[in-house]
Structures are given as structure tokens and as C-alpha cells.
Amino acid sequence: QEQLVESGGGLVQPGGSLRLSCAASGSIIRFNVVGWHRQAPGKQRELVAAIGRGGSINYADSVKGRFTISRDNAKNTVYLEMNSLKPDDTAVYHCNAGYRSGWYGDYWGQGTQVTVSS
Figure (cartoon, rainbow, N blue to C red):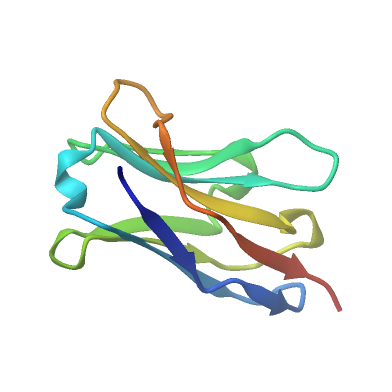
């Protein structure tokens, strides 16, 4: 059973920054895709950013230019650097990973809350 544990969420003012981390229980290079999804109250879960095995990256249009996804294979950790945060970014952010092709994996972390508010 794959385990993904997120950290780094919190309360931040509009325009501020946060960095989320996702630590995997094993080597992340095994996965075909690792990424971040978010779910706001009353909304469907949506892809935020993901990295494919070969290094290709997919960002949601709403976060392009503001968020950066990266990974540290030696630490088995995936990061999401979030800058210029907006109230609309408020959501529970979930780490995701999997072995199938495509941008969505089968394994999920428990999520970390990000709240953008003044």
C-alpha cells in the first residue's frame, strides 16, 4: 500500500506564498505520475499540477505562472511552491501518485488545508 503524507498548508494572506510537501513511503521514481490536486468546498476535485516520469509537467490554467511543482527523488518528496496566492486558491490540497499512464494516479494523501484570506 502506497502512502503519501502532505505537509505545509496553513493560513496566508492574499499575495502570499506557501510551499507544500508530499513525502512518499517509497521511491517516487517508481511512479508514472506524481502531482497535486485540490478540492474547494462545494466543488469537484481538480488537478493543480503534475509531473510525469520523464519530467513533463502539466499545470492547471488557473495556476500557471504562480505555482511550481518539483520533486526530490533522493528524499522521495514532491513539492508545490505557491506564490501570489488568491482567495480562490483556498482548498484542501491532496498529493496524488500512480503507475498508470495519464495525469491521475490511484494513490492519495489525506490532504492539507490551504486558506487564503485577509
